[in-house]
Amino acid sequence: MDTTIEKQTIIIADDNESYLKQLTKEFNNSEDFEVIASVSDGAEALAIIANKKPDIVIFDIVLGNLDG
Image 1 (cartoon, rainbow, N blue to C red):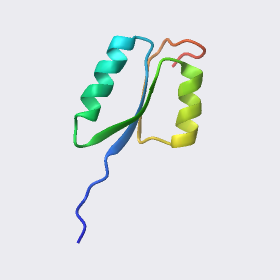
Image 2: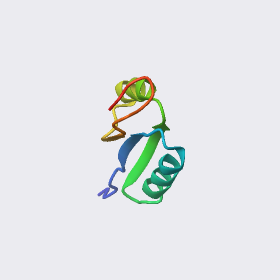
Image 3: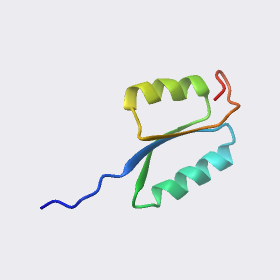
Image 4: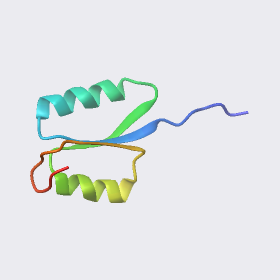
């Protein structure tokens, strides 16, 4: 019986590069989560979300090219 639990996939969109890197690092160090994309552009984030269909999206309210 396979008891492996799949990690929850996350996309993070934030224009603060240091915060984006730190948040990505923290989630990737967890056994429960995997960041599949981290971007600083809102339009790019939406395209990735549509393509990869993550479990969780963390989207900054104010971003370039599209606000959250």
